[in-house]
Image (cartoon, rainbow, N blue to C red; front, side, top):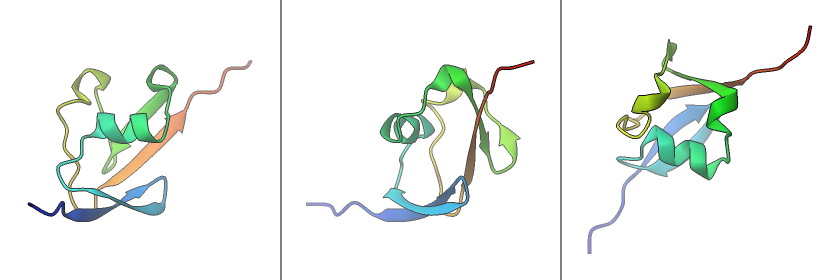
Length: 72
């Protein structure tokens, strides 16, 4: 049986351990982020929400999730 390797990433400034080959979409689902109401940045680059299921996280990736706030 193959052991699943863990890697460290940073999510909104906090270190998080995740499984290797984890995708952004899985992470967002696990932390219960409403995808329609946020912008997702990976290593200082805004991500296309249509590609979240294809982007695998790597060791030391930095993810920032920014919530939109209405008002005026």
